Image (cartoon, rainbow, N blue to C red; front, side):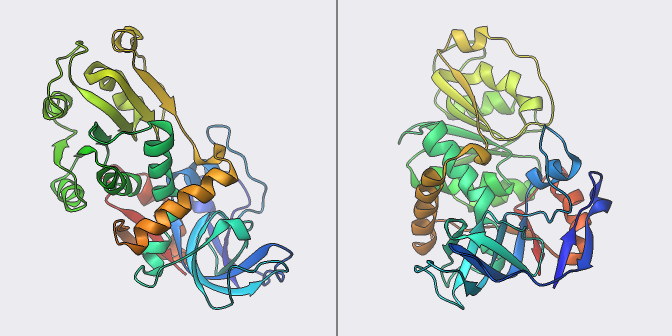
Length: 328
Protein backbone atom coordinates (compact mmCIF):
# COMPACT_ATOMS: atom_id res chain seq x y z
CA UNK A 1 0.00 0.00 0.00
CA UNK A 2 1.02 3.65 -0.33
CA UNK A 3 1.75 5.78 2.71
CA UNK A 4 3.43 9.05 3.59
CA UNK A 5 6.59 8.21 5.54
CA UNK A 6 8.62 10.69 7.61
CA UNK A 7 12.08 9.64 8.83
CA UNK A 8 13.32 12.91 10.40
CA UNK A 9 12.09 16.28 11.63
CA UNK A 10 12.10 19.03 9.07
CA UNK A 11 10.10 21.06 6.59
CA UNK A 12 7.26 19.82 4.40
CA UNK A 13 9.78 18.15 2.11
CA UNK A 14 10.30 15.33 4.64
CA UNK A 15 6.81 14.04 3.80
CA UNK A 16 7.57 11.30 1.25
CA UNK A 17 5.06 8.99 -0.45
CA UNK A 18 6.34 5.41 -0.38
CA UNK A 19 5.16 1.93 -1.19
CA UNK A 20 5.09 -0.02 2.08
CA UNK A 21 3.96 -3.44 3.25
CA UNK A 22 0.27 -3.92 3.95
CA UNK A 23 -0.77 -3.42 7.56
CA UNK A 24 -1.24 -6.53 9.68
CA UNK A 25 -4.70 -7.87 10.48
CA UNK A 26 -6.34 -5.93 13.32
CA UNK A 27 -5.73 -7.29 16.81
CA UNK A 28 -8.30 -7.53 19.60
CA UNK A 29 -10.30 -4.33 19.90
CA UNK A 30 -8.83 -2.91 16.69
CA UNK A 31 -10.32 -1.87 13.33
CA UNK A 32 -8.65 -1.75 9.89
CA UNK A 33 -9.98 1.12 7.77
CA UNK A 34 -9.49 1.49 4.02
CA UNK A 35 -9.27 5.25 3.70
CA UNK A 36 -10.81 7.45 1.05
CA UNK A 37 -9.66 10.77 2.52
CA UNK A 38 -7.42 12.13 5.28
CA UNK A 39 -7.71 15.44 7.10
CA UNK A 40 -4.72 17.78 7.43
CA UNK A 41 -4.40 19.77 10.67
CA UNK A 42 -1.84 22.33 11.92
CA UNK A 43 -0.84 20.06 14.81
CA UNK A 44 0.66 17.62 12.28
CA UNK A 45 3.03 20.34 11.08
CA UNK A 46 4.22 20.86 14.67
CA UNK A 47 4.77 17.12 15.06
CA UNK A 48 6.67 17.06 11.77
CA UNK A 49 8.94 19.88 12.92
CA UNK A 50 9.40 18.57 16.46
CA UNK A 51 8.09 21.94 17.69
CA UNK A 52 6.38 22.79 21.00
CA UNK A 53 7.78 19.67 22.69
CA UNK A 54 5.82 17.44 20.32
CA UNK A 55 7.69 14.23 19.59
CA UNK A 56 7.11 11.26 17.30
CA UNK A 57 8.80 7.95 16.76
CA UNK A 58 10.34 7.49 13.31
CA UNK A 59 9.46 6.21 10.78
CA UNK A 60 6.19 8.05 11.18
CA UNK A 61 3.00 8.40 9.15
CA UNK A 62 1.12 11.59 10.09
CA UNK A 63 -2.59 11.98 10.55
CA UNK A 64 -5.36 11.19 12.98
CA UNK A 65 -8.38 12.22 10.90
CA UNK A 66 -9.69 10.18 8.01
CA UNK A 67 -12.76 8.58 6.48
CA UNK A 68 -13.40 5.42 4.54
CA UNK A 69 -14.82 1.92 4.94
CA UNK A 70 -14.01 -0.81 7.42
CA UNK A 71 -11.93 -3.55 5.83
CA UNK A 72 -11.46 -5.88 8.81
CA UNK A 73 -12.38 -6.14 12.49
CA UNK A 74 -10.35 -7.51 15.38
CA UNK A 75 -11.69 -9.86 18.01
CA UNK A 76 -14.25 -8.32 20.33
CA UNK A 77 -15.32 -5.49 18.02
CA UNK A 78 -19.10 -5.78 17.74
CA UNK A 79 -20.56 -2.34 17.07
CA UNK A 80 -19.17 -2.08 13.51
CA UNK A 81 -19.32 -4.29 10.43
CA UNK A 82 -17.05 -4.82 7.43
CA UNK A 83 -17.83 -2.34 4.66
CA UNK A 84 -19.35 0.24 7.03
CA UNK A 85 -18.69 3.92 6.33
CA UNK A 86 -16.71 5.47 9.21
CA UNK A 87 -14.55 8.40 10.17
CA UNK A 88 -11.48 8.23 12.38
CA UNK A 89 -10.62 10.50 15.29
CA UNK A 90 -7.21 9.09 16.12
CA UNK A 91 -5.19 6.28 14.58
CA UNK A 92 -2.52 3.80 15.62
CA UNK A 93 -0.67 3.96 12.31
CA UNK A 94 -1.50 7.38 10.77
CA UNK A 95 -4.10 8.39 8.20
CA UNK A 96 -1.87 9.80 5.45
CA UNK A 97 -2.06 6.35 3.88
CA UNK A 98 -4.32 4.00 1.96
CA UNK A 99 -5.21 2.12 5.15
CA UNK A 100 -4.90 2.68 8.88
CA UNK A 101 -5.27 0.66 12.06
CA UNK A 102 -7.36 2.18 14.85
CA UNK A 103 -8.58 1.29 18.28
CA UNK A 104 -12.33 0.70 18.23
CA UNK A 105 -12.89 3.88 20.27
CA UNK A 106 -11.14 5.94 17.56
CA UNK A 107 -13.69 4.95 14.91
CA UNK A 108 -17.16 6.46 14.48
CA UNK A 109 -20.07 5.85 12.12
CA UNK A 110 -20.23 8.26 9.16
CA UNK A 111 -23.78 9.21 8.13
CA UNK A 112 -24.67 8.56 4.47
CA UNK A 113 -25.31 12.25 3.89
CA UNK A 114 -21.70 13.12 4.83
CA UNK A 115 -19.04 12.62 2.15
CA UNK A 116 -15.71 10.95 2.88
CA UNK A 117 -13.94 14.28 2.31
CA UNK A 118 -16.24 15.94 4.87
CA UNK A 119 -15.81 13.01 7.24
CA UNK A 120 -12.06 13.57 7.22
CA UNK A 121 -12.69 17.04 8.71
CA UNK A 122 -14.47 15.92 11.89
CA UNK A 123 -11.89 14.40 14.24
CA UNK A 124 -9.70 17.37 15.16
CA UNK A 125 -11.58 20.48 13.93
CA UNK A 126 -15.11 19.68 15.09
CA UNK A 127 -14.07 17.94 18.32
CA UNK A 128 -11.79 20.87 19.19
CA UNK A 129 -14.65 23.31 18.66
CA UNK A 130 -17.03 21.24 20.82
CA UNK A 131 -14.49 20.80 23.61
CA UNK A 132 -13.56 24.49 23.64
CA UNK A 133 -17.16 25.71 23.79
CA UNK A 134 -18.98 23.15 25.89
CA UNK A 135 -16.32 21.96 28.32
CA UNK A 136 -13.67 24.68 28.59
CA UNK A 137 -15.67 27.90 28.10
CA UNK A 138 -18.87 26.31 29.50
CA UNK A 139 -20.84 28.43 27.06
CA UNK A 140 -24.37 29.36 28.08
CA UNK A 141 -27.41 30.13 25.97
CA UNK A 142 -27.72 33.86 25.38
CA UNK A 143 -24.01 34.64 25.74
CA UNK A 144 -22.02 36.37 23.03
CA UNK A 145 -18.95 34.76 21.51
CA UNK A 146 -16.27 36.13 19.21
CA UNK A 147 -14.67 33.37 17.16
CA UNK A 148 -11.35 34.81 16.06
CA UNK A 149 -10.31 33.27 12.74
CA UNK A 150 -13.74 31.79 12.15
CA UNK A 151 -13.20 30.89 8.49
CA UNK A 152 -10.83 28.01 9.28
CA UNK A 153 -11.88 24.43 9.95
CA UNK A 154 -12.22 24.81 13.73
CA UNK A 155 -13.85 28.22 13.41
CA UNK A 156 -16.57 27.13 10.97
CA UNK A 157 -17.41 24.13 13.14
CA UNK A 158 -17.45 26.33 16.25
CA UNK A 159 -19.79 28.80 14.55
CA UNK A 160 -22.38 26.09 13.97
CA UNK A 161 -21.99 24.47 17.40
CA UNK A 162 -22.30 27.84 19.13
CA UNK A 163 -25.43 28.75 17.17
CA UNK A 164 -27.00 25.37 17.96
CA UNK A 165 -26.30 26.08 21.65
CA UNK A 166 -28.14 29.41 21.51
CA UNK A 167 -25.21 31.85 21.53
CA UNK A 168 -24.95 35.15 19.68
CA UNK A 169 -22.05 34.46 17.33
CA UNK A 170 -19.62 37.00 15.91
CA UNK A 171 -16.92 35.65 13.63
CA UNK A 172 -13.76 37.32 12.42
CA UNK A 173 -12.07 36.64 9.09
CA UNK A 174 -9.49 38.42 7.00
CA UNK A 175 -11.06 38.07 3.55
CA UNK A 176 -14.44 38.86 2.05
CA UNK A 177 -14.91 35.23 0.99
CA UNK A 178 -14.00 34.08 4.50
CA UNK A 179 -16.51 36.43 6.10
CA UNK A 180 -19.21 35.23 3.69
CA UNK A 181 -18.41 31.61 4.60
CA UNK A 182 -18.82 32.43 8.31
CA UNK A 183 -22.19 34.09 7.70
CA UNK A 184 -23.27 31.13 5.56
CA UNK A 185 -22.61 28.86 8.56
CA UNK A 186 -25.02 30.86 10.69
CA UNK A 187 -22.99 33.59 12.39
CA UNK A 188 -25.02 36.60 13.51
CA UNK A 189 -22.30 39.06 12.49
CA UNK A 190 -18.76 39.18 11.11
CA UNK A 191 -15.83 41.57 11.47
CA UNK A 192 -12.62 41.98 9.51
CA UNK A 193 -9.73 41.16 11.85
CA UNK A 194 -7.39 43.27 9.70
CA UNK A 195 -9.39 46.34 10.74
CA UNK A 196 -7.76 47.90 13.84
CA UNK A 197 -11.20 48.60 15.26
CA UNK A 198 -12.64 45.11 14.84
CA UNK A 199 -12.62 44.25 18.55
CA UNK A 200 -14.48 47.42 19.43
CA UNK A 201 -17.02 46.57 16.71
CA UNK A 202 -17.44 43.08 18.14
CA UNK A 203 -17.84 44.36 21.70
CA UNK A 204 -20.50 46.86 20.63
CA UNK A 205 -22.34 44.13 18.72
CA UNK A 206 -22.24 42.19 21.99
CA UNK A 207 -24.30 44.93 23.63
CA UNK A 208 -21.84 47.43 24.99
CA UNK A 209 -18.22 47.18 25.90
CA UNK A 210 -15.78 50.04 26.30
CA UNK A 211 -12.06 49.54 26.14
CA UNK A 212 -10.62 48.78 29.58
CA UNK A 213 -14.10 48.81 31.15
CA UNK A 214 -15.87 45.79 32.61
CA UNK A 215 -19.38 46.75 31.48
CA UNK A 216 -20.85 44.84 28.56
CA UNK A 217 -18.47 43.25 26.11
CA UNK A 218 -17.74 39.70 24.98
CA UNK A 219 -18.56 36.72 27.17
CA UNK A 220 -16.31 34.32 25.26
CA UNK A 221 -13.47 34.68 22.77
CA UNK A 222 -12.35 31.57 20.91
CA UNK A 223 -8.77 32.42 19.98
CA UNK A 224 -6.95 30.72 17.08
CA UNK A 225 -3.87 32.98 17.06
CA UNK A 226 -3.20 34.00 20.63
CA UNK A 227 0.33 35.27 19.99
CA UNK A 228 -1.18 38.07 17.88
CA UNK A 229 -4.54 38.76 19.53
CA UNK A 230 -4.61 37.76 23.19
CA UNK A 231 -3.39 41.01 24.74
CA UNK A 232 -6.11 42.95 22.92
CA UNK A 233 -8.85 40.35 23.43
CA UNK A 234 -8.71 40.82 27.21
CA UNK A 235 -9.60 44.49 26.98
CA UNK A 236 -13.01 43.80 25.43
CA UNK A 237 -14.29 41.01 27.68
CA UNK A 238 -17.43 41.28 29.76
CA UNK A 239 -17.30 40.63 33.51
CA UNK A 240 -16.66 36.91 33.94
CA UNK A 241 -15.48 36.67 30.32
CA UNK A 242 -13.38 33.76 29.12
CA UNK A 243 -10.76 33.44 26.39
CA UNK A 244 -10.13 29.89 25.20
CA UNK A 245 -6.79 29.56 23.43
CA UNK A 246 -7.04 26.97 20.66
CA UNK A 247 -3.98 28.09 18.68
CA UNK A 248 -0.81 30.09 19.21
CA UNK A 249 2.46 30.38 17.32
CA UNK A 250 4.57 32.28 19.83
CA UNK A 251 4.64 34.47 22.92
CA UNK A 252 2.75 37.65 23.75
CA UNK A 253 2.77 40.09 26.72
CA UNK A 254 -0.53 40.65 28.51
CA UNK A 255 -1.71 42.95 31.29
CA UNK A 256 -3.11 40.82 34.17
CA UNK A 257 -5.18 43.79 35.35
CA UNK A 258 -7.37 43.32 32.29
CA UNK A 259 -8.34 39.98 33.83
CA UNK A 260 -8.59 41.24 37.41
CA UNK A 261 -11.02 44.08 36.71
CA UNK A 262 -13.39 41.63 35.00
CA UNK A 263 -12.94 38.46 37.05
CA UNK A 264 -12.03 37.07 33.63
CA UNK A 265 -9.96 34.03 32.71
CA UNK A 266 -7.73 32.58 30.01
CA UNK A 267 -7.93 28.85 29.38
CA UNK A 268 -5.82 26.72 27.07
CA UNK A 269 -6.90 23.45 25.53
CA UNK A 270 -5.54 20.55 23.51
CA UNK A 271 -7.37 17.45 22.36
CA UNK A 272 -4.31 15.47 23.40
CA UNK A 273 -5.36 16.05 27.02
CA UNK A 274 -8.93 14.81 26.66
CA UNK A 275 -9.72 11.45 28.32
CA UNK A 276 -11.36 8.75 26.23
CA UNK A 277 -14.72 8.88 27.98
CA UNK A 278 -14.98 12.61 27.29
CA UNK A 279 -14.03 12.09 23.64
CA UNK A 280 -16.76 9.48 23.35
CA UNK A 281 -19.29 11.99 24.67
CA UNK A 282 -18.04 14.68 22.27
CA UNK A 283 -18.32 12.41 19.23
CA UNK A 284 -21.77 11.26 20.30
CA UNK A 285 -22.84 14.90 20.27
CA UNK A 286 -21.18 15.59 16.93
CA UNK A 287 -22.76 12.46 15.47
CA UNK A 288 -26.20 13.65 16.48
CA UNK A 289 -25.58 17.04 14.87
CA UNK A 290 -24.37 15.36 11.67
CA UNK A 291 -27.48 13.18 11.46
CA UNK A 292 -29.70 16.25 11.94
CA UNK A 293 -27.58 18.19 9.42
CA UNK A 294 -26.92 20.87 12.02
CA UNK A 295 -23.19 20.54 11.35
CA UNK A 296 -21.72 20.95 7.89
CA UNK A 297 -18.01 20.38 7.32
CA UNK A 298 -16.33 22.76 4.90
CA UNK A 299 -13.69 21.29 2.58
CA UNK A 300 -11.49 24.14 1.39
CA UNK A 301 -8.98 22.17 -0.69
CA UNK A 302 -8.62 18.57 -1.82
CA UNK A 303 -5.11 17.46 -2.78
CA UNK A 304 -3.79 14.03 -3.77
CA UNK A 305 -1.92 12.04 -1.12
CA UNK A 306 1.32 12.58 -3.06
CA UNK A 307 1.00 16.33 -2.38
CA UNK A 308 1.05 16.05 1.41
CA UNK A 309 4.01 18.45 1.51
CA UNK A 310 1.98 21.10 -0.30
CA UNK A 311 -0.92 20.46 2.07
CA UNK A 312 1.36 21.14 5.06
CA UNK A 313 2.47 24.42 3.51
CA UNK A 314 -1.12 25.44 2.72
CA UNK A 315 -2.54 24.65 6.16
CA UNK A 316 -0.20 27.16 7.79
CA UNK A 317 -1.00 30.06 5.46
CA UNK A 318 -3.11 32.95 6.79
CA UNK A 319 -6.64 33.40 5.50
CA UNK A 320 -7.60 29.74 5.72
CA UNK A 321 -11.04 28.84 4.41
CA UNK A 322 -12.29 25.49 5.57
CA UNK A 323 -10.28 22.28 5.87
CA UNK A 324 -7.54 20.75 3.73
CA UNK A 325 -8.08 17.13 2.76
CA UNK A 326 -5.83 14.54 1.13
CA UNK A 327 -7.61 12.31 -1.37
CA UNK A 328 -6.35 8.76 -0.88
